[in-house]
Image (tube, rainbow, N blue to C red; front, top):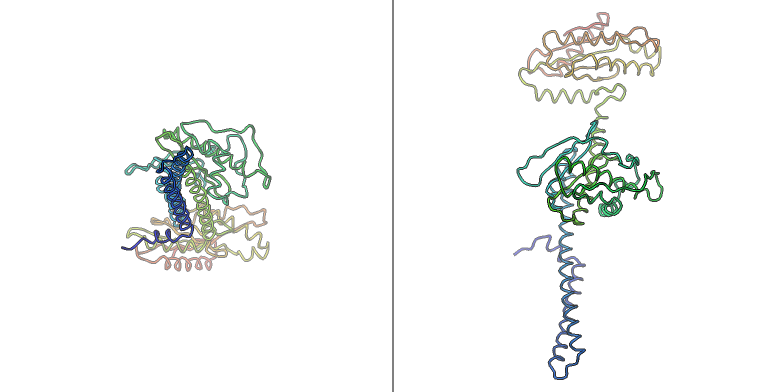
Length: 456
C-alpha cells in the first residue's frame, strides 16, 4: 500500500526523527527505572524513599505523556494553520481584481478560523462611502451588503491615519498579530459591542521615529475595531475579531470575523486573520497598481482621452459582440492648420490646444460614444447606434464646440477642425473599413476648404 507523499516527507524530516529518538530514549529510561523500582518494591525490605520515588516516577511519566499529547495537538494545529494560510495565498495569487481577492479569502477564513460570518469592509476606487459585505459560512445563505461612512477610516483619537509607516506591509503575519493584539487591545478582541480601547492622548507620527511602528499598530487596531463596532450594529453580530486592510500604507477597510459563541478567539484564528489581512492588503495594492498601469497604457497622457491602442481594442471587442441590429459610425477629426500653430507659438501652446480640443470633443459627443486621440492632431470617435443623420449631427456639434474655444490667451484668434463621417451600411461591415471611409471623408473636408463635416 503506497504512502502519501506528504506522509513520507513528514517521516523523513530530520527534526521529527530526533524527536522520536528522544521519546524512545525517555520511554526506555522510564521503563528501566520502573523495572528497578518494581524489583525493590517486591522485596521485604521496602523503605519509604522507595515509595516516594515510585510515586515521582509515575507522576513524571504521566506528565511526559500529557506533554507529548499537547505537543502533538499543537503541531497538528500549526500544520492545519499553515495549510489554511497556504490556501489563502494560493487563492490570492490567482486573483487580479479587488472583488476576486475578497472572494479568495472569505471562504478559507471561515474554515480556518471557525467564524460563522465574515464581513469585508473596503473603500472602492473613487467611492464616497465604505462598502461592507457580510458572508455567512453556512451553505445556501446569500451575502448582503451595506454602506458605512468613510469617516470610519479615521482614527477616533485624531492621529493621522494616512501615515505611511516604513513597515506597512513588510511586517510578518505572526508579528503583526502579536503587535495588534497587545498594543491595540480591543482592535483584536471586541466581543459584545465593547467600546474601542483608547490611549491617553493622540501621538503625532513621524517617519523613522522610534516607536512609530507601534503607534501605527495602535491606529490600525482602533480603526479596525471602529469598523467592527459598526458591523456589529449593522448586522447584529456578537463576538468579533478584526484586522485592517490598507494599500500603500493608507487604510482602506477591515476584515471582521464573527462567531455566535462567547469564547475568546484562539491565537490561531488571530494569526490566520492577521496573515490574511496583510496578504490581502498586498494583493489589493497589486490590483490597484495593475489597474492604474492598464489605465496609463490605454490613456493619452496629454489629453486624458483613450489612446489609439484602447480605441482599436474597443473596436475589436465591439466587432465580436455586435448584433445584427447594432448600428456603428465613426468620426475622424483633424485640427486645421495645426502645424502652423506649432511653428508660430511653439509646442507648449500646441499641447494646450490639443488638450482644449480633446475636452471639447469629449463634451460634444453622446454618453455612449467613445472619443480617442488617434495620433498627432487627429482624433476619432466611435458612435454607438447612431440613427439617421445622428452621425453628421454629432460631427457638427464637435465642429461647433471647437469653434467656440477661447484661445486668445495663447494669441490664437480662431481654431477649427475638419470632420469625416462614416456609418455602417450593413450589420457585418468591418469597423476598420468604416475608419478608412471616415478618413477619406476627412481628407475630402480638408480639400473643400476645411472647417466642415463631410459624410462618406
